Image 1: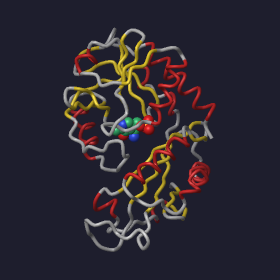
Image 2 (image 1 turned 90 degrees about the vertical axis):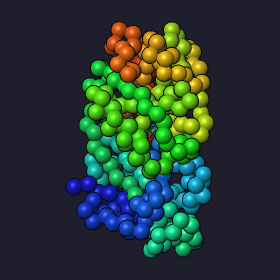
Image 3 (image 1 turned 30 degrees about the vertical axis):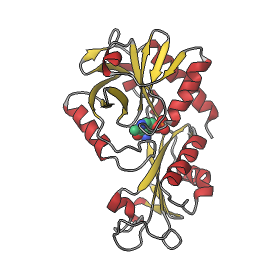
Image 4 (image 1 turned 180 degrees about the vertical axis):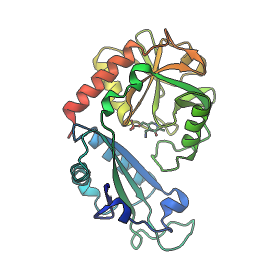
Length: 286
Ligand code: PMP
């Protein structure tokens, strides 16, 4: 049984409790982060912490008690649960004032809820899916307009994954005004020649922590990077494609809406960036 963290306490998962009036439950009024663990250490922790602080600020949500000890709490959970490779999920909600109201409760009297739990994923960095590559379908992007805030409103991305599964694919890329925004739970990239193209940062996409690291490694390796929107047709005509996220690292994409990219196998740029990202992350993990 897992030991989880709820509002200052470490508890067995079956004893952890959050109110039915919690605004995370009633209104998806909450934000989250997922940090990966390799060899018992945290990958890109500082980046996730900085983005969490930004998400809270954007929603006028106060920092939860424990915010200043988040590194220690993450490490405690890794140790208490014996996590070698896996993920730490963290969620902050606007808490519960014991009723339901659209108006935010007074932050002085209603503290945010802070929950963290671990997911053990042995061999996270050796995911066999990376050898095969992913098949992607395209779907309309029907999400709200502030995708740069990492909220727990994940119903549409979840529906997108189910649409992909029904179509015999692994994931979906979302399309808005003819251009790819991002994957359901990852940032999207195409490669043409020596150039990597990925959408620029804005309110339209999540500012991926893995994205920032991968783009800087790509530039260090003398690859060209263009941060701009790209169309679905451009993607289908690309030499290769891939996605990035904290849990998948760099994952090759080999097919889009039934069209195979290149020779239909993971491309050299995606494979190389995956290798660099995992190597460097292991070295820099805390
Ligand atoms: N975009 C979306 C919509 C996501 O849900 C995620 C992962 N949570 C990402 C991008 C990738 O972000 P990160 O690299 O920080 O995991």
